[in-house]
Image (cartoon, rainbow, N blue to C red; front, top):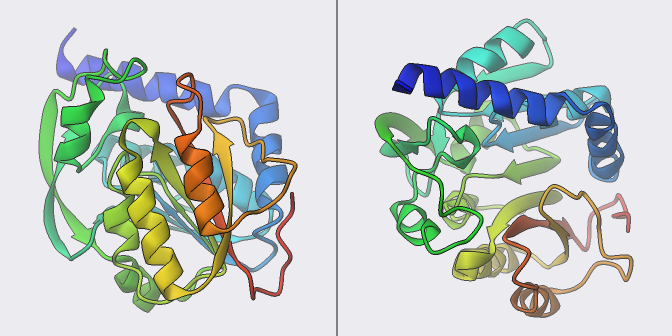
Length: 256
């Protein structure tokens, strides 16, 4: 299979996975309703095919979809390019502005990354050992602060950039009300650096949701120390998930 066909197949697979199950968008709406409401601004950093964009639009939010993969940008423009509440920013996000190298997986576009470290470590992870990053492309990168300067302060930020989350959050210099970042359990040092940086900005409370389950721990939100401990005690069957963080002083009380 040539690279162009493999890329088309991979993108189609992603589209069907994220849009083809009717209840998935409803579940996303339920999960994010505790963070976003009408008129709120959200940044989707690593928007991929835009399923979060659709859920946030249904909640009445305004969305900046940040996605550097050319094939995904084309799809996002087809889906949301004419929606006045969506801005598509075709850049990567990193600790500093400038060009970065994007490692593309044609068959698995959700696993595209700018992290050389993650590409090196992934082969040792059962859930990712079959993935091959078979192309590279240079793309422009900005910082989270750049996005805030251009679009305004968001109510919520989602960061899903395959092992580069710490570098994205390192470029945020002021606290936001709530956010999430992806965790790859093969490299918990990245998550630890994310939490450390957030705690420098202000005090947060945290929750973890395994995989794409969108399920939160019913025991409630915990502090940074407890979140670090919880991540290190995850069973080996959990290879990824998302940490959610809410400021303790924000007006909107986080759900459970």
